[in-house]
Image 1 (cartoon, helix red, strand yellow):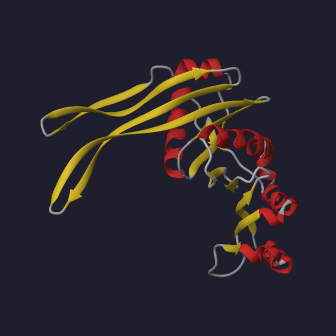
Image 2 (cartoon, one colour):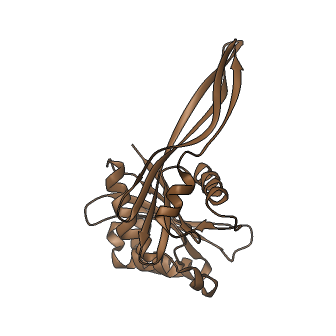
Length: 234
């Protein structure tokens, strides 16, 4: 089962106790009626747990979905859970959401509105082109895929290298001159295959449990992210 995550950085507040107090008991609930039955929709924070350098919890989103069966349409209440973790590393605080990009972005925006009056209090974590380049060049045999963006060719937005193409040093150097590395898929020393983009969308393709995936993100991805003050230089 593929696991998807996205990593953000919290500008303020950077105290887990304050974050916990702001998120505890958060529930924005409305009521909807389905076939004479009243159901609750909205979003709530559940299972909030404060640890030494982590704050973990779950976003529970409930909504009404419409499904078609032949010529009939049915409305069904659905709940979706998204685990999250605030992780402290040094003087920085990161938010890791176990969700695909679109939902992760939406929930990160929701977190920013709840925890701070400052606009942009939660921002995307970022890796540099140079970091992804170094990740590939340190272990080219373990890299499966490379995507390049910002391509300086008319009508071409992205270039990619797969499989045996990755061993073609000349082609790789040519692509480096034409664009910047946006996404790589590589295998860790433990044999776990992951994909990572410059804006810290992390996909774990190997069959591992979420805690193992989180540990990879904490130890292999987050330490390589750009500090907030250094991003304009890239």
